[in-house]
View 1 (cartoon, helix red, strand yellow):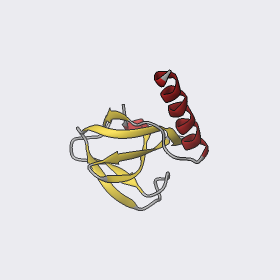
View 2 (tube, helix red, strand yellow):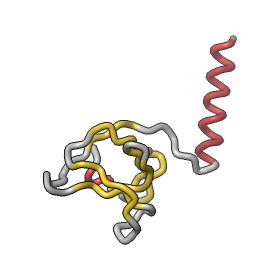
View 3 (cartoon, one colour):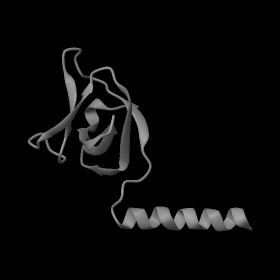
View 4 (tube, one colour):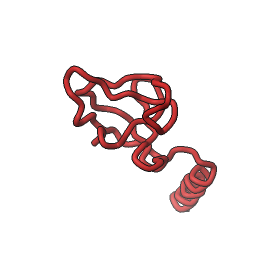
Length: 92
């Protein structure tokens, strides 16, 4: 009975978070297709013209990607305490 109630509660919370626009669960990803002399920029908004708020090294892994909050080819990310947007072409 407790498991059923907890499962129903978790589903309700997840549904509410989705409706409210909160990012769903994040998956750890690695940076790909970035040259060794370059970085993957974290942007304030989902566009390449937006301000840079952080950088992710070309060989980094452990980038938290909120796939449920993507806008086109951009997804919300978090890396070492910095949150923003990154282009999915460079994440796997």
